[in-house]
Length: 210
Image: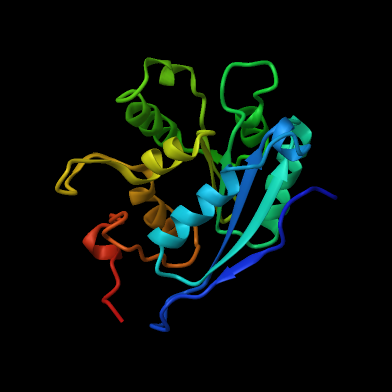
């Protein structure tokens, strides 16, 4: 399957026994994928994840149009390639070409409604039109797939949450729950940089620092 996606990108991390993780990042846009304008979704996703995670990361980027079957096929491909986490951006509104949630649910084995609920709660702090967003999150095999908003600023806000001037978390971001979710579905143990996003795990699921 051909597309205009960049090649896989590997980022190193401190050698501390951290498990490597493969992450699929998918930007879904008719115009960006056809070259009408430069894609901003993939750089935004890669930048935030590289700052948030301590683990060595291999990114599998994809830039594709708003076509439901193409989106579903891409998600299946990334899960089969061993991506423990797949994040999409774009195509979650009510417009006729916005079909990312439908494509994601079509490949789901389990749905996790709380992710979408929390993303909308965060975005509603800024714009009343957040109620129009339809992001979903699902589990397929041993992979967590999450639809994110389309704007880079909103991507960071929903992942990281809202903080006051002193850095205290006012509204938790969704990524705080991602590492433990990946634990539960059999993926690698993800560790975060707490200054960006502090992962939450029950004490019984925490590993001692290496």
